[in-house]
Every structure is written in C-alpha cells, then in structure tokens.
Length: 349
Ligand code: NAD
Image (tube, rainbow, N blue to C red; front, side, top):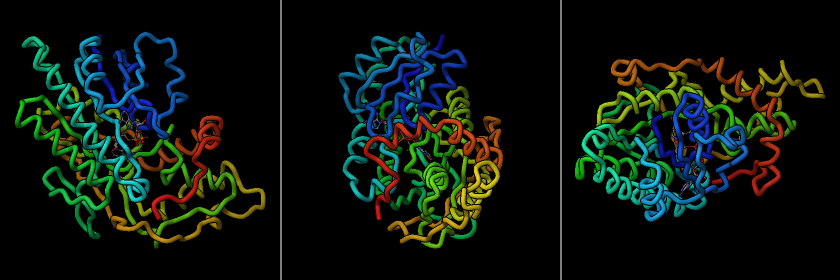
C-alpha cells in the first residue's frame, strides 16, 4: 500500500483529498497544525481507520517532519498546509510568511534529507507535490488566460507568500534535484469549506435571512472548480506529472462574483425559500471593495488535459447545486464552527 504524508489535511481541500485517498486504498499520514481553519470534525469518518494517522504539528518543525518521514517512509509528500484567506492576509500578513514561506522551507529541507537517504528505486519514485494557487499570476483584463508560463505578479500578501513558496519548491528541484511537482489551481468550492470564503459564507447568510455582502461592483471574475475535481487533478499529477513541472488546474467555469451569489440565491429559492416569501436576491448588499482586489482570474488548463488526460467531472451548475445541498444536510458541521470565534464577520476591509 502506498503511503502519503499530507500536510494541512484537516483543512478544506486537504481533508477532501485525504478522504478520497483513503477511500481509494492509500495510507495517509496527516500533519496539520489545527489553526482556526483545521477541523477534526471533517475527518470523523476516519476515526479508528488504520489507513489514517493524524498528527498535530507545524510544517516548519523540521525535527517533527524528520521523525515522521523516518517512521512512516512515505512515497510522496503533498503540501496543502497554508494560511489561505486573502482577507486575513490583509489584516495580518506575518502568519502567511511564517507558514507559507518559512514553513514550506522547513518541510522542503526535511524532505530533501529524507529523499537523499532512500535507495535508488524509492528515490526515483518519490514525489513532493506542492499545492498552489492561480493567484500568483496576478490579475487579468477582460481577455486571456493564465498559462504555466505567465509571469508571476502576486498582488496580495497571501498570493505573494504562495508565490515565494512556489519559487522555493522550484529551487529545490534545480538546486538539489528534489523530485517536485507544483499545481496552481483556481477557486475551489464544495463540502467542508470554512465559512469565511464566498460560497459557504453566502449560503449561511442567505439561510439566516441576513444581508449578502458583495465586494465592490460584484464583477470580479473567478474560475470555479469543485473540490473533488481539484483532488482528482492532484492525484493525476502525482501519478504521471513530469518532474519539476507546474500544472494549472481549472474548471473552465468563469463567473462574476455577483453571478455566483445570484446562482446560490436561485437554488435556495427552490429548496429553502425565505419565510417572508421574498427572493434571496433581495438580500444582496454591495459593500466596500477588498483593497487591491484582483479583477479577473481565468485558467488555461490545456497542459493538464493534453499531457495527463485530466478534465473536471463537474460543471459549475452541478457542483454548486451539490454544494448548497451539502450545507443544508450538514448544519451541525457549520454550527460547530460558528459557535467558536468566527461569526461570519467582514475581514480584511
Ligand atoms: P484551509 O485554510 O481550509 O486549510 C489549511 C489547513 O492548513 C488547515 O487545516 C490548517 O490548520 C493547516 N495549517 C495552517 N498552517 C499550518 C502549519 N504551519 N503547519 C501545518 N498545518 C497548517 O485551506 P484550503 O482552502 O484547504 O487550501 C489548501 C491549499 O490549497 C493551500 O495551500 C491553498 O493555498 C491552496 N489553494 C486553495 C484554493 C482555494 O480555493 N481554497 C485554490 C487554490 C489553491
């Protein structure tokens, strides 16, 4: 059985990835610091499963990583761990540098030393996969797409920290020969997402009949990918990606934020109408824009399709319906989060 060391596997995408990997017969050692974004509830279904080992700790803790690698002898490391919310990076960038840059460096150094000690066959088969974002490329105008050769131009402290980590991963390949892969993905949505992010935030506020905050004019465009599709893309890159390469991952689903919010409203009008009979759209409220808000992201994922034969299984329409339904069916999951320190307040204004 193959073993993966997954970091950040109690967060949104990492946990979806862990659940999928264990279901597919992989063994996962899951290292997560359990920041506000890490959530053991999400991993409840794996309790007692010997194919999942959870360890609370920091990716920057070289001693801990070295011990985990020596004990579990993974065939690959998949690095999801990060501070991930742009608005929080505006309020406090230091934590983003600490984890996304310094932490990734610690993880890379410990992994390099472990990889150097492997026998020839294991060393050749080993992979370090770094999960990154399309936000490193900056902002697009009305036309065009990000490709793997688009120059980096990060605009937020979050994207700057992710860009720095991508460069470190690249440098570890060129300098030390570490067998790395990097994926740069567009906006994810789906089950188990912390409700600070647009889609779960809007679902929660709409269900509560509260104002739905839309930043600026609502015309900022993002490409949206259902989280299961992101996880399947990572698995595909892990299996067959060319060493040292980066792969853009996208859903071919560009939508303006206002369209995303209106789509959620229309679904909720059908499945959970407001008591006062008004459409959920009547709750939309335009609020002050995010400082430095990138206007448009769009992904050209043809390299991943042409080289590795990957495409998303979900359209935006099927994914968003499934997502709204998931949040309706899993109210205790979200309620437990909202009973803590975060109550859907505006961040990063
Ligand atoms: P998330 O914030 O939901 O989860 C991050 C997880 O990392 C949490 O469980 C947290 O506890 C853990 N963590 C934070 N600091 C840590 C540290 N120092 N050591 C160990 N664990 C730590 O984030 P997400 O949305 O699941 O994103 C996962 C990865 O995917 C990130 O690297 C992010 O940059 C990238 N990404 C996210 C999106 C998106 O739309 N959410 C899109 C593209 C790429």
